[in-house]
Length: 299
Length: 306
Image 1 (cartoon, rainbow over the protein chains, first blue to last red):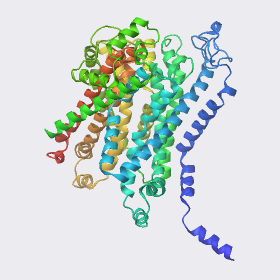
Image 2 (cartoon, one colour):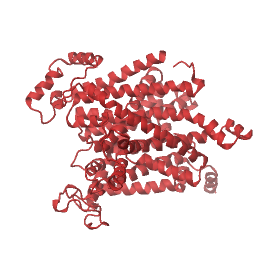
Image 3 (cartoon, each protein chain N blue to C red):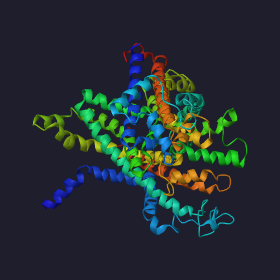
Image 4 (cartoon, chains in turn yellow, cyan):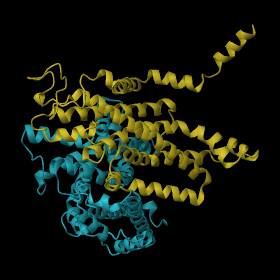
């Protein structure tokens, strides 16, 4: 009897936030499509070791410039053809995806930690601290990041840790801006004032009361930042200041392929296609997340 | 006048901040003389570099002389070409500015009608097509689009040259490549801004008093969107310069971006430093121009203290 009454009450109360988000997500076809594409990309590069038909570094000079399977001269052994050293393009694409996705994922997350922290501090503490942080953001946003990255690489070289460090710094501004905005709005909310009245310190208010409430817009930014960072990484690798050969990355594969665009178009086209599809899917997911998490949210 | 002062101060902070950052980064990264001279340098070259940069002196002395040199606009000579680095960068600057300016003009001219159309025909086929194309435009790396354009228009159709710079023909593909991303960004921005403007009371009033739809759209609504467009195009100038670096490399277009990328291969640090300096100045100047143009676009901001 009591249990039934409880169930009735539960059914009448509005569904929980998580359930509402899930319901909206399931009905959003572009979110589903983007998720499917991303799952495919992530799985295929995670299991590159198992899926790749060839060793991505193995050179086979007898089989240079093999065209893709469906063109005259193509063979099933090299479904997407081979490059100037006879290396299998498909295998290199699968392995190349690892680097791009890992850099996008890791650097966006580190950016998020830096950006959200600075945004919370700027928004809550205010005053000169706020001014200094936001000025720094303006300066970084105003200066072409690629030029800065090239200059740093000129000094430090382009080892992977340097690259990861650089790209982790690249994205913090976007998080900081949105977090600061949210924090300014919440700073004088009743529950925050209440916490302050009962003696909660600045750190506690920021971590316990403000942080949870700025996370959902930052999830959207996180998605967009992954897409942007994949694009920046591939640009840097294309310019020769990113991931260094022979390690395959989509950007440096494209850079190699560019030399042979007259005769072997597939060398440049497939890596570019991989970048475009991945970035498109990540952006679509970001758009969808924004709609799903909070339809009123405008970023 | 006060704005000019603020701008100059900001300029100084940006330039000195970035150059100082590079200065200390270079000194912290082991033996800077070895780094600057490159992996294949002879001991004589390393010694020459050490002397040229005064790397044998204490850090404080080095920093002071670095500050002095920067104020005197002395960035040293290019290792490779033996010419003053700043001069080399300034010689390449006009080509890059032309590329960027042409791309902005093309982007605005294409993006504004697209954005307006996408807003007006919301939910219809045209709007969906535009949203799809702009999503694609934002996802495609510019260097890839450039290569695809080369493949189609230079290699297959043989209509346009695939590399070099100088005349109009050589500029078509680089400008198109550089503008594409910006078109996508601006068109989406115009669309969302337009959707908001179109729902406002004064637009309803304009319709209600019987003005033709075309007039309401292009006179009343678009005027308000213009500010958004100018702000975005101005702030995106730094993205555009970054994009130019990539696009110039794709098309071997003789701007400062190509030179910058080439100077990395040759470890030509003075050129890198001078490029950073010039780019910082150009970007801040553009932001100032954008700020200044608000006076004409939006009378409300007139006389507002900066």
